[in-house]
Structures are given as C-alpha cells and as structure tokens.
Length: 129
Length: 129
Image (cartoon, rainbow over all chains, first blue to last red; front, top):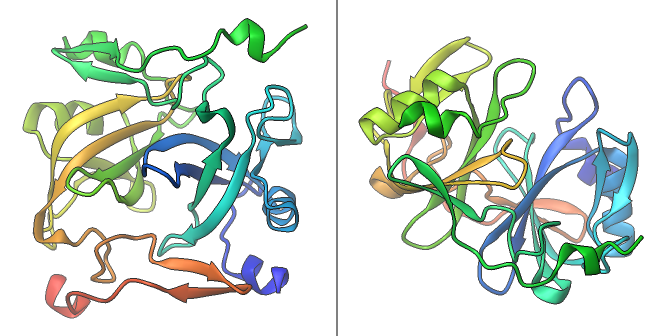
C-alpha cells in the first residue's frame, strides 16, 4: 500500500519534494520542509511528520529536539504530484523554531516585513544544550 | 520599498522560491508554484499573483490563459525567508488547471490517492485553443 502511494509522488532530481504542514485545528499553514521517500514512508508508518534536512543530509522527525511533534491527520497531493500537504495536530501549538505557532509570522505591510505572531516559548527552552 | 522587501527573500541557487497561494476566503491551500525576483516585483506592482515557469522559463500571471487570476490580499514570509505565502481572492474559485478549486484534491485514503474535490469547470473551456 505504501508503494502504491509512493508511485504518485514526483520527487525532484535530488529525490525531494516540499511538504506543507497545515494545522488541522485552524487551517493555518505552519511550515514547509522537504521530504524524501524515506521521510514519507516513516511518516506513514509512525503517524508523525518526518522530513529530510538538506543541510544535515539526514531524516528528522519534527519535534525530535523540541518535543513539538506533528501528528498527521490526513495527507493531500497536488495535481502534479510534486507538492504534498499534511494536516497535523501540532504538539504544544508551536511549529516554528523561533517559538511561534507558525513559521509564516512575517507579513508585508507598507513595504516592510512585520512580525505578526507572538513568541509563545523561549527557543532556549525548546532546544536546551 | 520593494527593494527593502526583496532584501529578506532568500531565493535558491536558481533564483527561485516556492510561493503558496491560500484562499483568503476559506484558508484553503490552493496551489504552490515558483517565483523569482521579477515575479515578486510584478505581483507587488499589479496586485495579481505572478509566478515563474521553470518548464517555459518565463514569467506568467496566474489566470493569463484561463482568466482565473489571483488578487493578492496579504503576503507572508517564513522564518528562513525561503518560502512565501500569499492570501488571494481566486477568480472563479478555480485555482487548478484541472478545473478544481484547489490543486490539492487528492487525499491518501487506505493507501490510495482519492479525488476529493469536484471538477467545477471543463479544462477544455478554461484553455480554448
């Protein structure tokens, strides 16, 4: 069954595609990160969103450091099969490493990017050394 | 002012970044496409979403063929500055070239991708020869 699902995914030349995490509770776009085949399979098997870090060149589970994992409620694929969305329950209500609910917290207002979402948790607490 | 806004955008090695169009009326994710600097500037100047086609290697305005343009209501940037969302009013309520409201019309159900959104308009009518 996982193989049949994989057949429709069109990864790029690097074997990656963007995955958009959407808050299942309020429809907010939380973050965008890359997935590869392994990240997709692990996400299906575990029910938790996994991504592939290009900078670290490895699979990671969202929340593995911060505890703010994402429980997947549903998965959706676009017409070209090269972008995926998953609707998630975001643990702690914090998706961004800056401690905000969403990574898309900057809004263009009068030509400047303005922070529009509060910091809910000190990042130092999220990623203790 | 546009230059100041551009300063925060981190385009990739190809000069591109993904832009996610969100329906301003119901928060649905409509589509994802690429923008370059010119697409961003044209979108700001005109108020209509513009993208850059990698296959055709040119700027395009969403709806230039189908008439289903996107009026931008607000623009949001993520923490890394490498993905953008814009909330839009989708002309005709159809964002997908398949004639559906959204490009993300396939949902993974019991291991298979299932169409979950109706075709609202025949694509042949959207793109007459």
